[in-house]
Length: 285
Image (cartoon, rainbow, N blue to C red; front, side):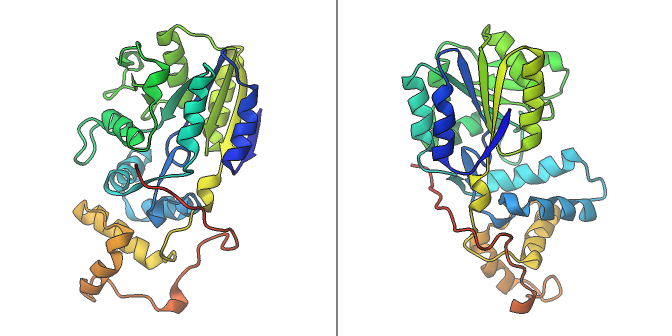
């Protein structure tokens, strides 16, 4: 079963059915944390993928991942909802196990030599501490997948990379030697929920998938403009440097007219679903 919710209150209602034999699984990006950058907003994902397909000759999932992670590690992280750390903490108070299942790879990226340690540190800066659910479980690299940079577990976080989340989750259950009666998985992508749901059915584990879309309401402080985002992506592609939204206007003002020409207001493209109200996001504590 998969249900769609867009508020934390809706998640809390559905977690009332969880008990000590339930495992609650959280995606990270767009569920626990998000980025302030306009290109990272869920509503702009199709534009991002289309640009990559048209501008990167060897476009592939690997190429998309490399660009996406370059943006990720160069940008400011925010909470999707400021009450989410409290919700996670409340699960521990109810003796309900929980874990993070993220598509982040263990492959070093940009200036980050250990992406999993970086991910854990970023989550902790917001008040998340998933290690508390597994205090005595050692870190583990799942080398049986045969990947150069294999999926790994550490401090309550599973980094999957290119391996499907369902397979990584089942590998973790075997490693932790647990068989939950029920798995509740919270993710913003329906394909991930369907993937894990099918694997749970095969394993005869009751499954509830929650597609959490609150991050889709987040609005960048600057209006969406295709030309401006193309400038950011082109700079990233050519110079391996991501220009954050906060520094974009300054960079454009000093940019040669032969490199970039500012669009007129008429050419600016409005963000989708403009009738939705902005959702406040919080920085790390």
